[in-house]
Image (cartoon, rainbow, N blue to C red; front, side, top):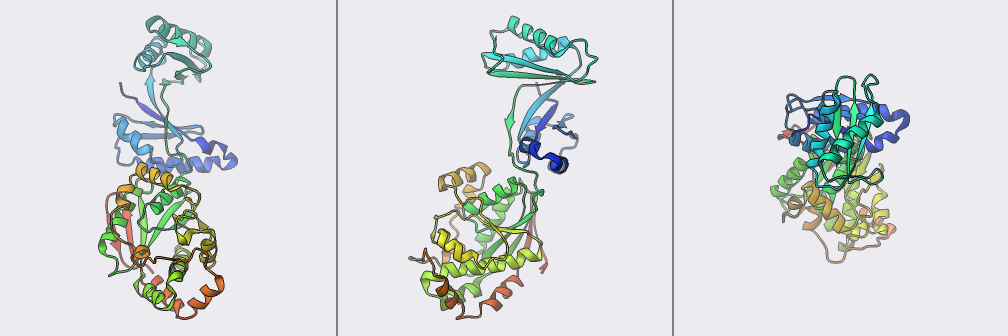
Length: 396
């Protein structure tokens, strides 16, 4: 027995007051876009729920695609039957028999006021049929199985299962961010959490050939292909960071190299973000995880940013980050043994409490501004999409 319809619940969107209609409209658009490969599906957007009519398309395939759409709180497979009490009752009995439960409750709503039974009568009739033909017991307060019946004008909807989805807000409702994507475990998870919160992403990666090789770029593209499940097209900016990074290590004491390197990354990221109307910078930093992520380091490094910086993983434990990475499918890609620009020049004793005066002094020893501009003006721009990644000409 396959469901005819999938009911989509909004969850947190229901608290949005006057803005609710904008959230629901965008979510409806995102759902239709996510399901565009299904030829028969029809999407019916309502104020309280959205109904996805399968019309013969595979339930499991459609359900799995919907689970990746941010803004959807939960799904229920819905069985559509005619407005006949015996047909309704027999389907509910079949649903009950297919569940290995002990207690149940029937919850009916008669939207069609011309139906010949009121809600309480429907409840008693259907429950009586289940009690006669199974070993179930009624529990109206804490039932193991809740069967919901909605009698509409032309048909009745019946459902008993609730599947939790991504939650969050519809992608794009909160604007756009430039995500600093290193290729490690953390930044793809941070990207996922940003998208789940309704923020559309562009990504920036700092490459240092020949110290880093093409395998790192392939790794980044593979990570973005996974994240395409949540945002179908992501623009990637690849920064030629070698020359600037070499100058840092020539002119700056080793213990301060990481601090100043991160400041340069923020400067470049802000230029790129402003050109492309990204409202904020985001990254995968987690407080205390490495030397550049202590509070004292973050304070000094972020001083150069001219845009707000969002850190979705700031208070996450590493074990929790890994758990999310496994769940979304990025972990195995992230642990591929290819070094990025942050690890290739890794030092043994980086400072965890940089001094602001020393940082300014060390930066004054070389013309970093022209090198920052050189990086920002020579980006490689790549579009990564669900089906393919396509390189495009330099856009800047």
